[in-house]
Length: 142
Ligand code: SF4
Ligand code: SF4
Image 1 (cartoon, rainbow, N blue to C red):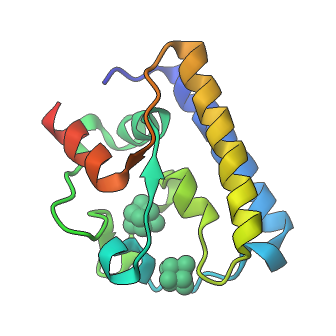
Image 2 (image 1 turned 30 degrees about the horizontal axis):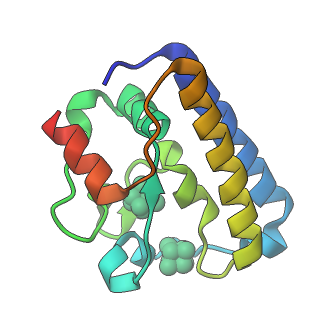
């Protein structure tokens, strides 16, 4: 997957907006204690879906060779309970908090997805909304 600086910059803007919205409405966003439990989607009964611009962003930041497959239900970037790509984590990781308000998260998620979808349209990238394992495994295969 080719990366494009303009796409990366636009994803950064989307993430920046998400971060300021969760910061400004901390009472709805919830306080994450960074225990890492929700990064094991099987154990926590949680799902994380990602879009191509988010993978392009991670790839640009980490190097495509460092995009790892996901052979288990745990995100491969969660090592010893900690997110090792915290600065570059996906929109869903920025939005979800087990202590947060579900409606607030749902609205944030909808608006972020609209923006990510619009990015795909603008840059003629096929839009997919794929669970993390599927997205990482197919990226690693490509
Ligand atoms: S990117 Fe980080 S926060 Fe998101 S699921 Fe993976 S380890 Fe967890
Ligand atoms: S959102 Fe909850 S489960 Fe996930 S890391 Fe934070 S405190 Fe742990």
